[in-house]
Length: 112
Image 1 (cartoon, rainbow, N blue to C red):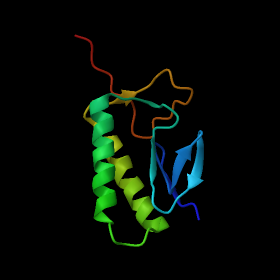
Image 2: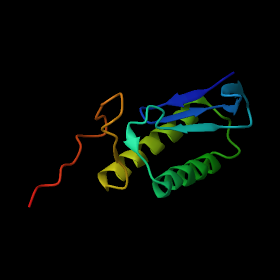
Image 3: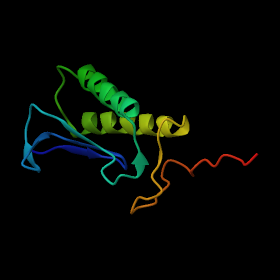
């Protein structure tokens, strides 16, 4: 059975991608970061998300994979996305088709 966790910017599936389709798997988790391109990412920020994902998955090693565990991982990653935005490591993509400031209003630097 396909399990999934979807937050605003983090989607996790018990599946692998083959030919642009999700194929159920009980051995593979697929992470989709910011599927609507609401944020502007750099490699360092993405690497922080992937590293935290690996760490969280490892922390559940040996436990049954449940909806609850998957949602906890997704929620923890969503909190990390928020902290990266607040630190200025990522930014809102103002060219996105969806302008939803779910992580707080964009910061505007005051003019000198």
